Image (cartoon, rainbow, N blue to C red):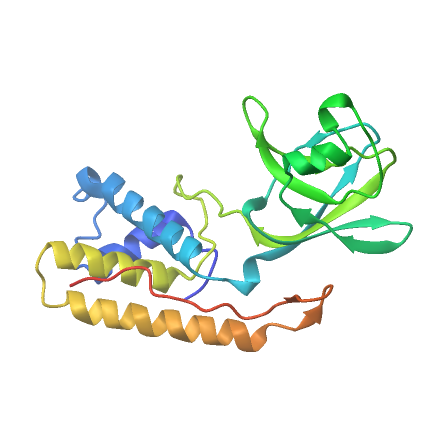
Length: 231
């Protein structure tokens, strides 16, 4: 009943919820499948719901003349909510989406520079996806992000889940039991859905509302949805 539970413990919980033998030697052949099930369920829950405790603030330093930047390592750049540039102590909003019309004003391909930065976008620069700054800065500055932390890996036995262990295990158990046509599948799914709603309600109640620029409050509640349905 906690976050940060190790994968090996999640497997033990899943075996218990699905009536499997806890003897590791007996269940070795299906161990990889159980781990993959748990990993996939956590990924779906992460993708389909807003988790306030995974909200982070990160920053990177803009360099004069530099167009492309690596994103902060643990920031999910697909779930960035607010970007602001700090210049002379003032935070200014930076819009996502760089167009050809923008290059008509400041042509980054020609090396045009200006500050402050006005827009950003994601570009595949060869082997990785990077942040593109427009216009190319002509002075140093700091770019600030509000967004969602990347989901930690859940591969090795000692890896820890970012989400609630019971939530992950109950959804996983419901799916496994449904494949086995077990009458207990619906009970597990009902327990999982109830827990999801409770966790999201608790998270919204605990979130502090802090003004971060016009039109956005860090900690706003997002509508949640159940990610797994077993029929």
